[in-house]
Image 1 (cartoon, helix red, strand yellow):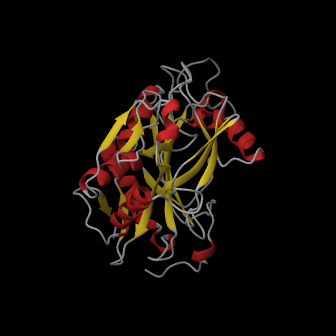
Image 2: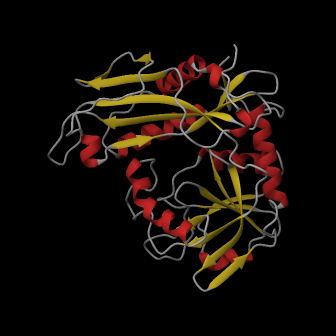
Length: 341
């Protein structure tokens, strides 16, 4: 497969249209067989449910070229599970999990020329999503839906190395108790836009959201889960019913325990104890782990011993091991790597 003539080393994290995408429609209580199409445009009625009431959910994953030249994706079955949970919470029909994985496979295969070569640092980002498509004016679920998957090549999240970032404790709430914080709903991200723009304008890289009920416990950022390391090298992640269950976080905890022999804890993390951790990172699909050097809590600064120059030693090992598994030079646990071609 001849690759597209793209300057892989200068790609950013932005949309670039590729040749094919997958589309399946839900009508009269059933999904159609689905198809690949070259048409990147969507035509909707002005009163479509997604436009009026934001009935939509999505996923994000990547395809990689491994060291031995294969194109693979990482744990797409877990993205399928999470999207099913999102759909159920938003009163949308579940797109079958096996068909989800099949759709991802077909789209990546059809766009193989856009999968960046091994060693470039770039990847093919995959965006499955679903939305209510028929006209709805009363507040109720749609009756018709569309499931789609598109891809776009993206550059490395860190250009020039992963420098620790500075984040702030946010005065806005990300999710309410018993709300939609645990699902990947588009409305969650719309709600976070004001807060992240405000953070950037004030010189911060991200927001740390606390639980909205007590504002004493760490939850997540707008698009990533927290990961902390104690001074005795225990890896700790916050546990809450309003946190999005990150596939990267789940994988990192497994790597910590089974590859690096570290103790792990998934538990409530109180803001008062954050100052006692040795390292901090944000984990998600885009960056795997973004190191955090400083947290600003209004008039108080929390500076981690790992510093502002590079990843802490434990987070660096976690990052190297997981990316090594994804890129094929460390053996993966069974079922983690889905081979496309």
